[in-house]
Length: 132
Image (tube, rainbow, N blue to C red; front, side, top):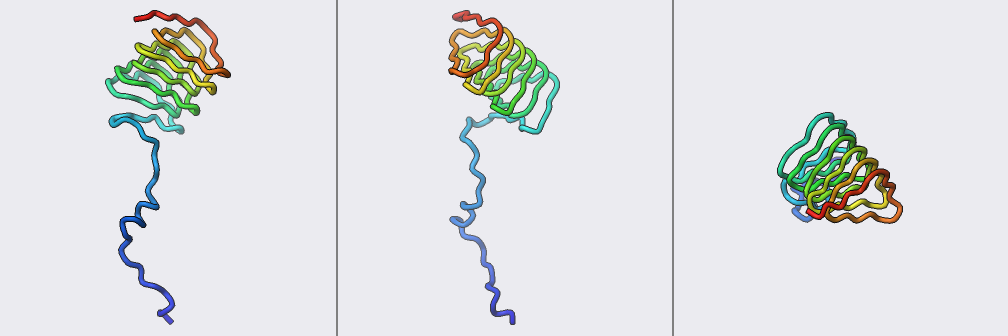
């Protein structure tokens, strides 16, 4: 009666690896704002941030900022390198480089020494190439 059930042993390391969640590779110390979150207020810091949800307010980072395809950001934003795949409304200032992907919708004043805008991106506003 009980012989037909196999006794489960301790999983082997290779078995456990099959159940590990594969996350995208990001730099250590990167912070995430999840897709289901809405944050209102000021975000500041030295590290990198990836936004997948909504943020209303200012962002001032020494590190890099990635506004993912699912993200909606409104306010004043400044960071070293900024990549936009989602929606951004407000002033955007990249200290080193700005990348606007084809899925992006950007409205406002953009300031960057170097900028790349992919074909298909929606950009409305003013672009200032300051060179600093």
